[in-house]
Image 1: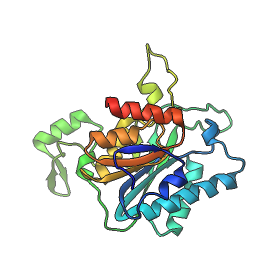
Image 2: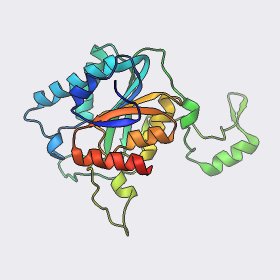
Image 3: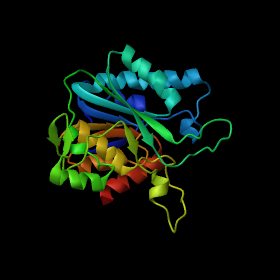
Image 4: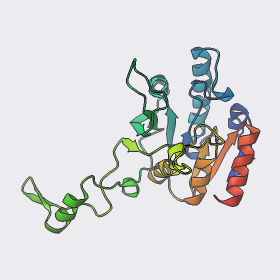
Length: 258
């Protein structure tokens, strides 16, 4: 039996075959994108990449509880194919979330500069958890909201007062990439894993789509951010990483709690 609160050094398919069906409340998956970022992100053909992707997706679907939610990171092109596959598998589409990273990785004069990633949000059934109040975001106009809090804003003959916790979260998320958040003396530094996700971004997903004690699945764990944030927020977690260097980093990170 697999232990919770542990990331296994294992191949993704070998690991998933050990996970009991319908045991996962929330899956947050940051998989390979087929962009040749590192050895683990290189595939011989596009078909090989999507065969690999759809294979692990199909296994993850089996592991989700009927009340479970699934978030998958990828680029926009790949996400279009992944979305179609998830719909064909009977999952329920909720959002195509645009993550505005505030840093284009590949400047281009032949097309618009890429400055986003996609996060697909699906659920297994209509009976799922979504804590909208836990992920409210600040209003854009602080001064206007300050005035509205005192006098209200007239809408359709009624006075509307802003929520003190902010507005409901939209499907466009602005989080600077980790390489920009953790600059040293104003300079971007190389991270052990090339594509770590911001803790605040992962925290938003976990708060919105799980409750304390729920089990979060973290495949392709990378730098272990999802596992780390899950534990910080009182969730259980399980997952895998097949790179020994990354796995050692994850283990030490969880042990240190940082």
